[in-house]
Image (cartoon, rainbow, N blue to C red; front, top):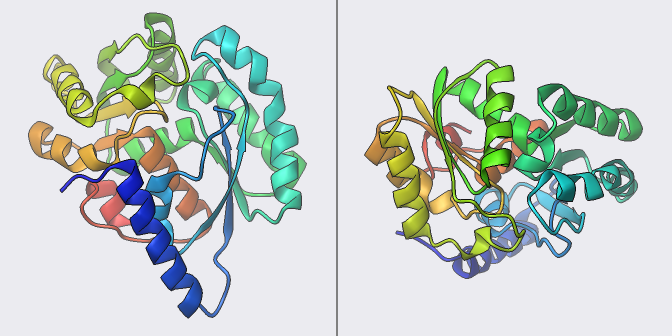
Length: 261
């Protein structure tokens, strides 16, 4: 059964309230630094881990998913991370897959290291979460369906190759405006992603890349169709953030990796 973001949020708020009423201790606070200016607490996060984690979000004000757009906001990440540390965050996740991979694997790691050095907090990024997810399922040859234009998709290909994977298929939706991924329906995204996988030469995992795409509800159906693990940006960044806090929460129905905890 598929749920809209509104339904996920309502369900998550309910579980969060129930947890707050019955919990003996306050759940740890995960800081999220996200590309859009008005990025809310992800409904997927509340639905998956609302009983176990609280969220604090800072939006960077990214307007376009292009190298020029990323360059305009990248220097805000460390100052926002320091604000989150002062607000009581226990760990920090830098959201935005393309924001963190667009200058390559070494830059992504430097960004993580800079935030960790300035805050003293465990830190990861959405791009690192994707890599960690692929390693967890022992993937080596991957197909990738993205929201991006050709240039940014190409940068993802290089990032994945630098991270030790062979990319056997890559195709993007050609989107650039930060608001465009939210307009993509789950049905069309599921079909697009399945088609990208079908074009691959024996891929052993499928990546669906872009934090703005709503992928939580299509992970399991895609795994059933493609018969390989699926790793996607927002759900698996939340999974990685949960683990960064030292938690291993198993949630069925959203693909094999999230089910493992």
